[in-house]
Image 1 (cartoon, rainbow, N blue to C red):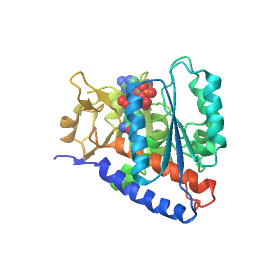
Image 2: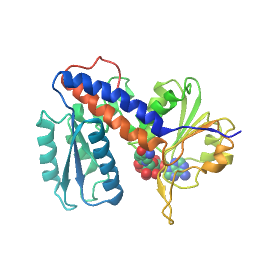
Image 3: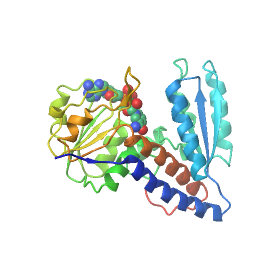
Length: 290
Ligand code: NAD
C-alpha cells in the first residue's frame, strides 16, 4: 500500500496561521517581533536559507534585518555585533547563520547570543533547558519534526524511534524531543555498528545524515513513519533527501517528501520561536512550553 504523504507545506501553513494570530495580539501592544540574522561570508546554501527566512518573516509581518560580514571578519568584530543586537530592545531574536568560516569559533560565537534571544536554540543554556524539560528555545528543525508528527496524529508514546544523525542542530534535539514525548529512542551516527539493523526496528524513523540514497527499503519496517530531513543536491541539480523515496513509499505508512517535507517546517518554527521570544520579552506569553 502506498504511504500517506506528509505535507510539510500544509503543516507549515497551519503554524503560520497561529503565528499571525499571535502577531495580531502583539500588535495590540504596539509590538512587532524583530529578528536579526548574522551572515558571514558567501556560502551559497546559507545565502538561500537566509533569503527564505527573510522572505518568510516579511510575509507574516515580522521585522527581519540582515547583518552581513565578509568571510575574513574577526572574532571580536562578530562578538561586538552580537553584543549590540543583544542590547537592542527592537531585536527579539538573534540568529547566526551556520556554518561559519573555519577561522571563527562557532561555539564561542553561539555562546555570545543572549539565551533569551537564541531563536535557533543552540546556546548551552537552551540545550540544558531542553534536556531538563524547562521552557527555552528549541532548534527549529527538531521542533518542526515534532509538529509534523503531531499534525498527522502520529502517537509517539511508547514507540521505537530511531534517529539517524546526532548533530547539535537536528539529530540530538530531535532525539531529546522524542524522548520527552515518551518514545524509546535510539540515536545512530557515523560510528554506529549496523545502523540498518537499528533502523529496521523503528516505528518512527528520522534520517538527518545528508547522504542521498542512504535509507533503502530494507532499512524500514513495514508501516513505519519516515521523516527525511536530508537535503542533498545531486550532480544533475535535483534535490533529494537521505531516503529512497519511491521504494519507501511502498513500505512506510507515512513519509515526508524532499523538498516539501521538513524544510518548510524549519522556517515556520523559526517564525514561531521569534514570536515566542517577543512574547516572553514583554511578558505576554501564556507560559506554555516552547
Ligand atoms: P551534520 O553533518 O552536522 O550531521 C550528520 C550526522 O550524520 C552526524 O551526526 C553523523 O555522525 C551522522 N552520520 C553520518 N553517516 C551516518 C550513517 N551512515 N548512519 C547514521 N548516521 C550517520 O548534518 P546536519 O546539519 O545534522 O544535517 C543533516 C542533513 O539534514 C543535511 O542533509 C542537511 O542539509 C539537512 N538539514 C535539513 C534541514 C531542513 O530544514 N530540512 C535543516 C537542517 C539540516
